[in-house]
Each structure stands twice: as structure tokens, then as C-alpha cells.
Length: 254
Image 1 (cartoon, helix red, strand yellow):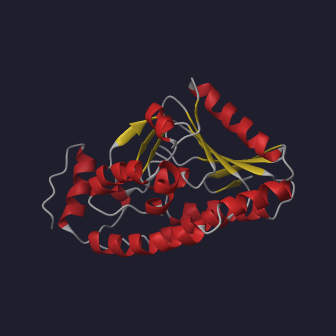
Image 2 (tube, one colour):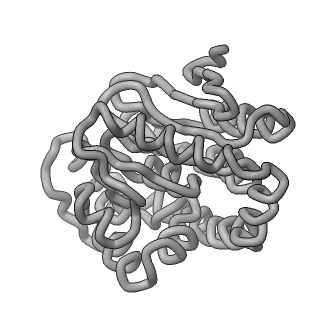
């Protein structure tokens, strides 16, 4: 089945959701709605016991496409309204991170319970390099996963890390030795989750994630308010222009 740019394949009791939005797998509010709707439908399907997320191509997700946006009227609220739905789904999720996961793409990867990286995976919460506050609830999900110190370093610098560093700090759970094995390892993880008693697995996951969706929503409320302010700044326009020109930004604090 295909809905817009999202393909859904059943692999036994694992549902494989793969998106294809070439060339960089950028995401927007419509895609987030499609993905959330698909996960909601799988929650209602008793034959699905685990979900595997992956991307077609060499990029997992490059985040939002600011080059195609009208910066004067930019409002991230519709995007986040759909994205936050992902944290309320019940089935365990594994992400096969085959390539870069940047900005909102990193936020999307952190929706999953487990992440399997490949040699080409890269992670960056590059928001401050674009001139605005991080979003997608990353100010809640990232410190929960890697600790406050590592999260502060990543969020306040926007620096990019490779798969080896991501594995070291706990951002991913395994690093495949080659590209061909990323999906295989992620599928094996999803199948292991699917092999447990479904009610027991889902209730255990619910206990471990208790309050997470609410924490993410609360964090995102602040993220959204600050982003709306900062999207009108000169630094934001400079950050977007610098990224498009592949140069270092020159920020002025305005």
C-alpha cells in the first residue's frame, strides 16, 4: 500500500514503513500527518506487533526544506501538531537510519524505541546553526536518551556526529558494518520485539514511556513559541542563506 510518499509493507507481524521524498527526504506537515495516520492504523491492527521505519535513498531525513519555504509567513505549528502524534502510538518502533538524520530528521529518529545506524549515518540537531531554537521535542527526548551533558553539547552547538560517536553516546543501539546490513539488523530487532506477548510488550513499553508524550508536548510548547519569535530575526535569515550557500553563518544577535 502506498499513501503519497509512504509505502507500507507487511513482513509477518512487522509493519515496514518506508518513505521516499527525493532527493533529501525532507518532511512537512502533510507527510507527518500521513505517517501518524499510518501508525494509528497499525495500532488498531492486532496482526501488527512491531513497526520498522526506514527511508529510500542515501538520506534518512534532512529535516524541513527551508529553501522551499516562505520565510515571511513560516509557522511550524501545523508540522508539530502532526509530529507530536507519533509519541502517542502504542506499537514498539525500530528505525533503520541508513544515512543523515538532520534537524527534524533527528527528531523523527528519536521517536523510535531503537535505532540501527549504518556507515553513512550522521546526526545533527543543527537548529542553532540556522539561527533558531531546536524543535520536535528534542529538548525533552535527546537528554532522556543520551543525558543532559551530551544533549547540551549537541543542541547548543548544532555539530554533526557520525555513527561511531552516536553509538558511543547511546544515540543509536547498533552500528551495521555495511549499508546492506542496516535494514537486516533493524528488521531482526523488530522481529525480536514482535516475538513477545503483544499485550505484555506494549504495556511494558507504555510503563517505560509513561509521561513521555506529555513531556515532549510541554517542551514543544516552549520550542514553538521561541521558534515563532526567532523566525522573524536577521540571524534566522542569515542562517538559512548561509546553509544554502554552504558557508559559515555570520550571526549578529539580531
